Image 1: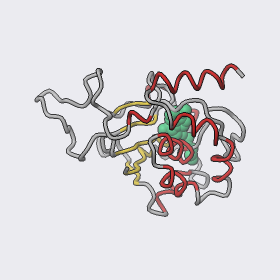
Image 2: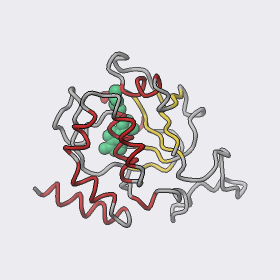
Image 3: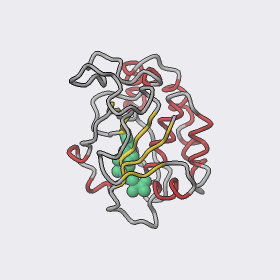
Length: 188
Ligand SMILES: C[S@@+](CC[C@H](N)C(=O)[O-])C[C@H]1O[C@@H](n2cnc3c(N)ncnc32)[C@H](O)[C@@H]1O
């Protein structure tokens, strides 16, 4: 799966995890929505939770998927649905619902805890690299997810803190099952 980031550039560049991924050729940054390839968009405001069912068939669902006005299926010609994973790197202050305007299959990550130094231990306040890595694990690409986190001193801690929920989400059949598992953590 190709990892892309819609990069806003309004956060501290020194701490920006997306820039670091790009420096190591682990992600491609895009300055505009138009330049960002179509795929699964990690959006904390999305109605649907990411699940293993999104691997390889995002866009095949009842929402009508990616079919465009001409009846074509591959709007941007990027290849197979679900081959592209996109995060939006911006500051949390500017990460309101309207910011997530880019076309794609928008998915929220289920309950996970941050390990980055800024928001350590805080649920759902994930950096871009934590979000991308968690998504890859849920989508069945654990080794790829680990590779992204290797560049960060606290990366391994993120996987340790979330070992059980990630394993359980990755074993779910669909989004509804992921939400059921998430509820167990929210009720604790
Ligand atoms: C708001 S940015 C903050 C980036 C931070 N400046 C950094 O350097 O990593 C984090 C991005 O990760 C993804 N993300 C984080 N938490 C998420 C969640 N719970 N569900 C879906 N995507 C999430 C989104 O794409 C979000 O815009």
